[in-house]
Image (cartoon, rainbow, N blue to C red; front, side):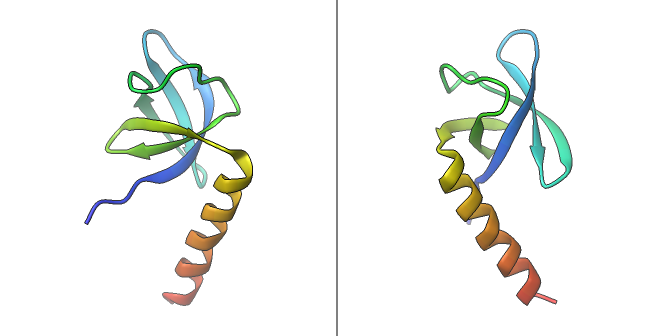
Length: 74
């Protein structure tokens, strides 16, 4: 099973690269599969690639669900 997660773009880099924030962890990813992404946008990330942009409200709901799952796993 694969998991793609929402992440917020915090920095744009040369080419199609960007840095995203994943719950406090920053990671460089590729934006080559997605158009018109800017700092502050949310994207769905899978294996180092942004797959699509995500509405901020949907990103917040999804991240809240992940946090809830993590809280119940303890």
